[in-house]
Length: 426
Ligand code: GLC
Image (tube, rainbow, N blue to C red; front, side, top):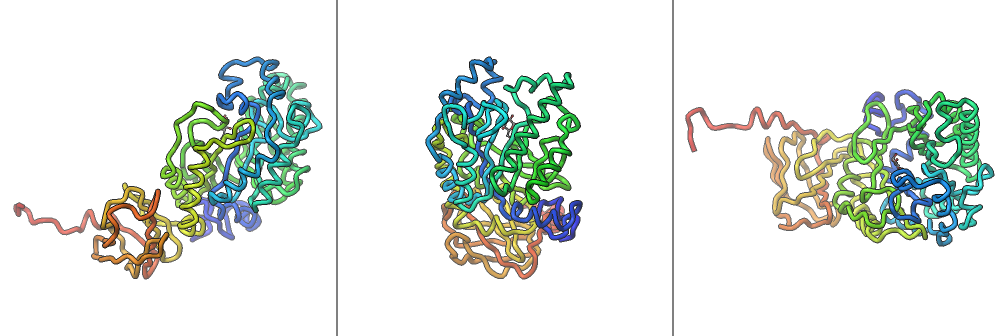
């Protein structure tokens, strides 16, 4: 793989374009991680009507603030999240330290509107950090620049004195987050309304962040590209930039008690594979209830995903760019000369791939290690003697050893597959 390809594909490379070797070294763990847990938790979790309830329902600030009297999570709820993340095969966790509602989950000196000084009486960011670290997971802080609560949060756009106060407040909060919790791995900004990056003084802010946390990885939502971009609710590889797709398991980031639009474990596993294959990461969200408990549907999805990762994780974490194209029933990843065929719609006793130009040496079901017999012609490799029903769930992965890097030429089939002679009928 050439240096130019490294960032475009999102694969770690010692010579990533742009930031030089340091950047590549700093980003390495993140590229290898592939899969992280996003956590949306705040006063909106008390309402259970989505994290945008304050704005969507037009709730007055004074009425919304009362939720701070009711937000009293169980101590160390984050420990269960971290255990679940670890079991799911996730390598890092990113929690909302302050969402758009403006409520800070940590013990800040800059406002009383924070968990430590309200009914909760504890620093929930500290609990989160401790929980993630004790499971060996990397720690990320989400921070919303947009703030629906701060008096200057909107008027800063057209009042310079307000902007000065609000930017000082914002950078003061970010400074606390980068100072009080030891080494941080990710800073995940969100919505930069209503200011431009110049208005936020994002360049200065991010310089401060990097001074305090030299190895931190910063996303692009302060309005500057920084280390990675953040396609939301869809998977789309960024060109020339590392990327992470963030996604909900139902349709809400914050707890929504009646949102039943859950994705299946199959969809989630397919998404993990797609992100990894396309060189990105997958940040999958949970929206815990106000007490910190995780909706059962999320637990189930993550548990099943984790069981699959246990059996098949090597085909996702430690891989290289794959030239074989995804098809209607399978996606593909690659490590060296091994092609991983991830079959999501199981065809039956035979599974075939068209146009593979590399010679297959052997094949096995990755989960069980069972050998799979095969026949290869110029146009098709057919894996045979397989069970009628998919042997693994929710996706079956076949590890195919080739004699060289697995390559595919589908055009060659279309153009060269022998056809009947003109006038020769069936
Ligand atoms: C959007 C939403 C926000 C959510 C975020 C996650 O920006 O406004 O609620 O936290 O996406 O990416």
